[in-house]
Picture 1 (cartoon, helix red, strand yellow):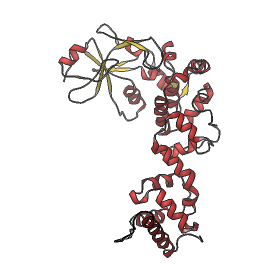
Picture 2 (picture 1 turned 135 degrees about the vertical axis):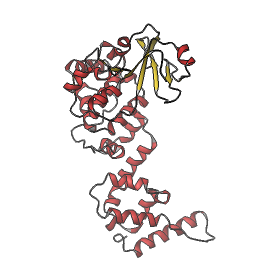
Picture 3 (picture 1 turned 135 degrees about the horizontal axis):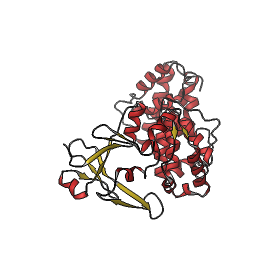
Length: 352
C-alpha cells in the first residue's frame, strides 16, 4: 500500500543494514501525516502516549514524526508533540545515539543529519544531543549496545555525560522492569561482559548492582541467557537481594537456585549416592520434562557422560508405582524408595 506521505525506515533497522547484521524489526516514521489521516488509511493505533500505528497488512510499526520535551520524572515524564509540521530531523534528534538516528527514504536514500554512518564506521557510541541526559535508561542502553556490537566503544563526551548522570543519582528513578529488560538483552548479547565494564566505568553499577565485581565475571559469548545469568550472580553471596531488587522473573531465580543447590550432585553424578541423585532429579522436575536439567547442564560444561545422564533422567521421570492403594505420604515414600532402588540396580552413584 503506497502512502500519500513521506515514510522512512528508521533506527536500529538502518544501523543493522549498515553493519551487515540481520534486520529483525523494521520501524517507520511518517512525516506530514495526522492521527486522523492514518486511521482513515486503515492503520490501527497502538501507542497510548504517542501516535504509533500498525500497518493494516504487514503489521509493521509506523510512528508519526514527533518531538519530546521533558515535563516530569521518569520515562513517562515527557510531553509529546506529533504534528504534520514536525520534520524528520526533528524526530531523529530526540533519539539516543547517532547510530540509531539515521533513516532511509522510500527511494533508498540515507538521511543522516548527525553522522551516524560515520560513527558506525568508527565503531563509536555517541549521543545525539543534550536530550540524552533526560532519560537515565539510556545509560543502560549504551552499555547494552557496547555488549551487542563487537568492537564499539563509548565516545569520551558521552562517557562523561553518563558519569555525570550517575553521580547525580539519575538511575534511582528507573523502574526495576526497565533495568531488567536491558540486562536480559545484554545477557543474550555477543559480549555480556562489556555491559558491566561500561557501567563500571561511569559508576552505573552503584545503584542497581552494588554487589557485583566485574573482574571475575566470565560469560558465554554464544548468548545462553540462563548460563550468563548464573555467571552474573553465581558468585554473589546475596543474590536473592539482587533478584528482588531487579524483580527477576521466577524462571531465572529457579535456574540460579538449581545451580546453587544441585550443581555438585549433577557434576559428580556417577559418584553421587542414589538418594541424592534421586532428590536432584525430583527437584529438577525431570518428571515434567528435561528443560531444567538441560539448563543446568549448560552451566556445567565439564560434566562427563552428559548424554548418559540425560537418558537416565528421562527413564527416571517415567517411573510409577502402578496400581496401588497407597495415598499421600505413604505413596510418596514408596515412590521415592522405588526410584532409589532403580538407580542402585543400574549401578549408578556411590555409597549412600
